[in-house]
Image (cartoon, rainbow, N blue to C red; front, side):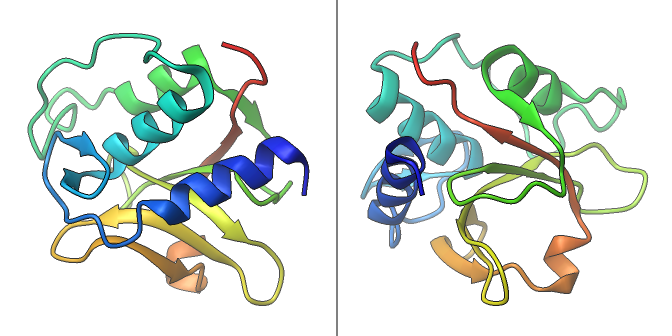
Length: 147
């Protein structure tokens, strides 16, 4: 693991146990999946790269817009979805033909693959990247080295 990947995974794991709170991004107090990513960004780069507008649980679904994917493309480095590495940002499509709107951080790769994510009713947890989760991954990114 590179030093950057190690820092991303260590920071993501430090959020484990944070309760799930929609639109929040405060370690220990509350976060959603985007808030977890925002918190990791702040630990790496300081301030966030753009203001996050208010969003509903079904945001961008009525319009069918890939807003989360588009934002990821503005600030992260997209990579081949098969090129797995610890610290990668994973973007999930939770239902077929729906917009991609769940995020996680790859904790481990290989046979015991896992990811860290903020999940409704669970808070921030590290889950197995089992087949049901793996088949939902539609994009993979990594953090830029500099802000």
